[in-house]
Length: 128
Image (tube, rainbow, N blue to C red; front, side, top):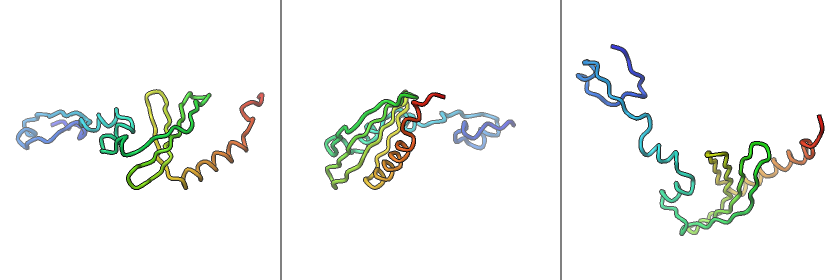
């Protein structure tokens, strides 16, 4: 009997396996597929943390000249508990990457980016 890859086989009875029957199932479940198509705001809403429980304030938006990624910073304030985070959202075509980071992480990341930017200022304008 030829083996079917485990990722493509569902639960079967032993008799069905002995007869050589194969049961195909989707590689992804409905919830995984839905989660893949949701952006972070949809995921937050699905967790019950909707707009009435947090405020979002746009802070900064820029498009990278090489690659065309859209980078956006937002202030996230949760009403319950008073948690304040910085949301870093990077859009690249259909792909979205979202980080919600605390003030300490934002400071360390920002300082590292500032050091790099100062060390390389004007480097992209030099002729080869």
